[in-house]
Length: 245
Length: 375
Image (cartoon, rainbow over all chains, first blue to last red; front, side):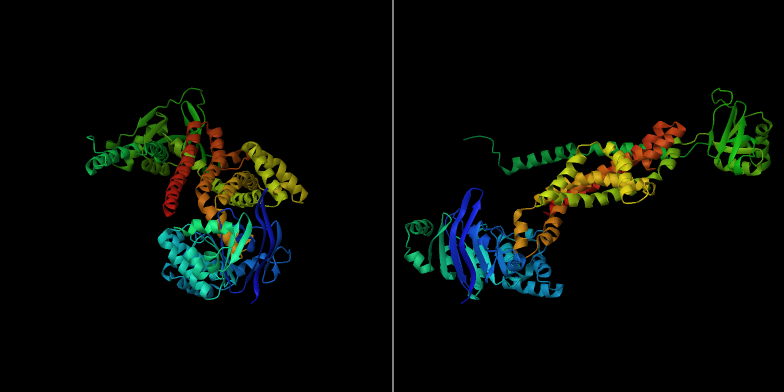
């Protein structure tokens, strides 16, 4: 399989604080990689560097062989291929669900209105809320908003989807509806990088799991290996804390 | 554990009711009643019917094309213009004290009787005859050579209003033109304030701080008489071709642009960072994200503040009177200067400005409440 994302010796400073201390990671096409770790471990920063919402202090990120730090790389074209789902949904509140899903298609993909709406409705149907096309974000529940946000990214036909703690801001009963959508996406062969604390989801969706701590990758393993036979003390300690309840 | 059961439905109910009824009266907008009381009185003074007409004797009818006629009373010589008012001063320097007779209406049945009654005026036995407008018109038509009519009690508020009111088009033109341009300047300077580019950012800050540090009136004079001539010279336009209205609009726009810049900046900064990140993560350029995602939300948030500045500019357009632009204030100054009717001249523009601003600000309150409900 082709390498979709290659991260080489990634370092990221915020002021004097080094949030990411030399991360190397290669993600292949169709692979679902789930990053776990305590807060402040740099996992969200790594994710945000993949589509350049954060600029790496040093190191290289390659998407399908394109070097993001290269001045000649059109970052907007790369971002159009990399969908991102945020913890806080970040839907555009002045637009309806359908307009949220169509605006970037029209501005970036240059699709005409009819085509953008057709694709937008397909994606809203895919996440299970076609009937909410005309609703504004404030009229939707958190789970519905997050599903619209996923549809918004999928409508761009991305090759990679990034999820930054997509269920952390949701009420417990809404988490499942979002995870179900993500699970379907994983089964369809989407390349996904997910930062999450949902261990059940991780077990059933992940091809590989990455455990990060203190800005570094501590351990990379399949879910079964990581849960049943973690190699590092730090990993054991973390898992014992989150799996016991 | 005996004690008042504060949470019982009945006690809450009665509290709600009591609270409800007192709140209603406490929140009653008495201030609005007071303002509309003033507006009502001014409207009454302006539209009030003028008093009866005076029929007076003409001594010299050969003045300019029939519009200006000299009429004479025993102790007053004055010029009567278009049947409207007596302009001039008593020739003897004595107060306006005429021998005025009232036409005894009951006696008059026919034209002959009317002419009979007017005879003392023509003969000079009385100075003037007090009667209603229609009869006065008829008699003047019958005796064009000898008689004319004037308003006995002209409505000075109405006169002031009629002279001043046409200035409202200029006032609105200045305000709308100035505000439209100010929105453009303000948006550009507001975006400049938050630009990543250090040069652009510093230019924008210089503009905003410079304008905020100088009095508005001084800026208007400087822009109109120093900056405009200098700029038009350097680009080869005759400075006299730049109309005074255009200078006023430019001055107001440049001044308000600086204030609007701060509002736009605050509005853009009030939108959460996640909005820009979401837009950029979808592949939009920074410009597209600003235009389609950030600005529509920011403008909605700041629209009440923009409305307030529109009202402020409507008021500040009066400063254009120092450039002799014939807007409301300048017209009322002219009227006051030529008639010495200061209360009438100035109260009329107080009325006009207040009527406009209070209407706008009530609309703004309503709109603000509506968008807050929408959130």
